[in-house]
Image (cartoon, rainbow over all chains, first blue to last red):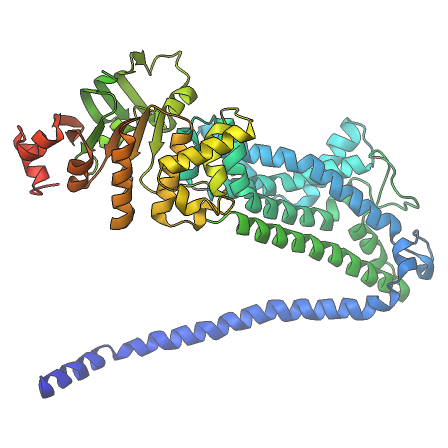
Length: 300
Length: 249
């Protein structure tokens, strides 16, 4: 060996010396990736800091429990956040069962038919339709044709339409992740299709379904445009007591305030943004918690 | 005769994967189905509990009778059939639930509500699958925490709980280590007293150790079907001889 072996290694190292380039590439991409990540995080932090700086001093119990007023210092967001709560619950009640059932049907019952393919493409497209279009649809269909007016129900139905594609797609993805062997095992024991879906597939996919569903709901409560179109941008000095009452929501209240010239109103807007962000963060937190909890229960 | 297959053909779309298989199986025996990959042995196995029904484009022709009942008769309830003909798969596929619930599942989907009865059945099934002593203190724990061999025995216990008379096993030990594999083989031997067992295997030793009869499949045809000892020591067809001695396949 000795000398001959050594020279062979030398030769080999020389031959492969251009692999250095790949190392540089690796490093370069690492820093580029870090930079991209930081842009997102830093910008978000700056925005958050700005909002907190401007709005925190305005945030107190009276602001949260106060009714709207034309004077900035007396105005509160009680009707707005209660409206948001109404919309949230009603949208969930309408959209969740329909969306999850549709996802189940497409994934479990009608997987490879032509109809299913067409529906799938359409749903993907629907998810990309601008929200204001949904607003116009809601205005025409629910507010006018069904005579529901500028009510909470109209708003919830419109937002349900908006988030249905997201729920359907995330339900399907969650069900796809459930291994086929689980279904096979269930069928082999004489379980019916319904029993297999209800007792095995759904529980195994529930964390994925809920995560998608809750995220879709946080999108719904942040929507402004479609609700403006159906007429929620009005002065509502009372809290809705039924699904046919008129309403306003936090994003619209914020939109209303930021469009005014007085500095006091923009302070109000910042404070309201803090509340809206808090609601969104809490919901995302719930989504993460559910995913975590179910993942512990259901391990592959 | 317990099980009778007459001229069974299976098609996947335009693929003719099983070409007229006829064979009969006696009660309380172990029959091994052997042959190279893609020869149709698993497909044949899945005809007996109609798992092929779940595959799109799959079509089964011919007749299969279990104790005189034509299982492809339109009036047959497939779910009832699958309770009579249990199945264990190649890869252990326990449900992501507790050990107890895995075994109880088959009873629950059959509408059994009596908890005392379920507990009793779970224990006897786990004993039947030689798993009870290993899991009796952790029945509430996730089945997925068990080892691969234990999971497979759990799947066998799960199948036993619904009191089938036939057990289909699709390479039940191929994903397991040698010790777990031996345990499964011993189990198969002891189950023979109460069940009629069909087992697909790639392992010649396993086939010769566990089975009474062996069927050799090649390219969708049943080439030879005989007593295991005869088939392994004195095969009539050259192709069988070549396969069992490892000259092809």
